[in-house]
View (cartoon, rainbow, N blue to C red):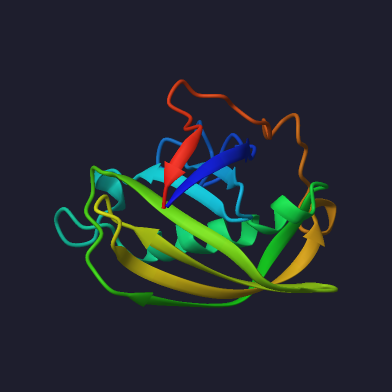
Length: 168
């Protein structure tokens, strides 16, 4: 199904998942969709592999966790971040390196200080490679870390290939 992109979330400088200047990171972009889900797009590199040509399961889990945890920002525009309490993942198919991969995350329960969500990593053919489920605390960033938004370059970075619509 085709979904319109309604916004793009910020990247940072050195975050492993979204840091645009982290040479070892995934440099993931996050897009808010009209249906209330969050889409992440990343391209795993050779340094992210386990078996030859396959994304390491820990990397897959990390990007699933980040996508679900960030989905709360769609509803809470102020910087309320998700801090993972528990997370589970089910791997269904090998995730190949060298492809643009999509991750979809959504909030399934939002109550007071906690929220829960689910997500999937989609292969280029649209099939599901991994499914994740997590529970998170809602925290303002100042309760998590000494985070200087300017120094961390926390901002939306428009890219030439940012999608306007996506097929999920």
